[in-house]
Image (cartoon, rainbow, N blue to C red):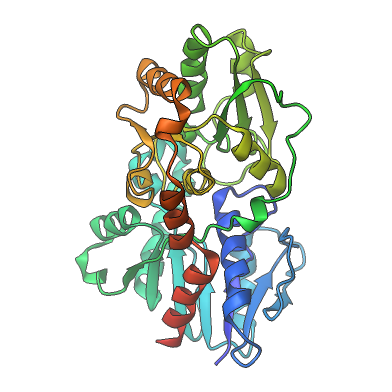
Length: 369
């Protein structure tokens, strides 16, 4: 029985956490599969993995004149021969696909914040989710929060086919880097890892940081994540760099944009605290990465962070409250060791989301179909 994973949605550096979730999963799959149980990865564009996929096979597809992932998957995947089982990691299930299907849905943000999507994109997401719920043999939700959302929207009749498997989180990819040259090494670093989508709520964090600087002069905010105009998907937020300039914080904020994995790891290890101000998260990959590296986290409860993070972050109850966010940051900065996860807690996080463990869950799931 041959299984294929579609990576056709990846546009390197432009699709946010779903791309890294896939890379982490592939890292795990290569360690738990063998050539005797062939798995292949279908790609429309080159992946930026940093490791050899073997024993996974690569099956590039090309549809002349097309770059849209939906069009490519719709035309190319049903035509592929020799695939008995599919793993579709980013919500879309093509019409006409043969064999058993497992499709991953990362969130239903469009149901909570419809204003973050165009009317056309909302209609498309609802239709794609409805079809996936009907067609897939199993729908994987990356958190219980997402699973609850899917059943609320689509009905309890699908309860038997929705399975919760968290995203894989690879800490190996975060090793070996050094701080980017733009980041001061002698300051108290507050790190935020979030692309410039509206639901990431970066203006609240910038406002909170401005309040923090009035009491901690050495504080420095580092914003990591793809900037507006480079992302695909939901609507972008306003230019965060312009907001930083408007608030007179240019000397105290570094906006890095997208950075390589090793540099991201160095930023985590150098941070006094990681701040995640999101209004909505299906999973919250940076929360797990930071906690797994022993770094204290200030986060909202929006979506799944309070579920997946073992109650380790310092939580902000009102994600839009600038003053509350500032107070939580100041509390952690005053005593980082008190709020950092213990070595044992960090180890539990790493084991719970380890790529081999999560990959094994998918291998067992596909084998059961």
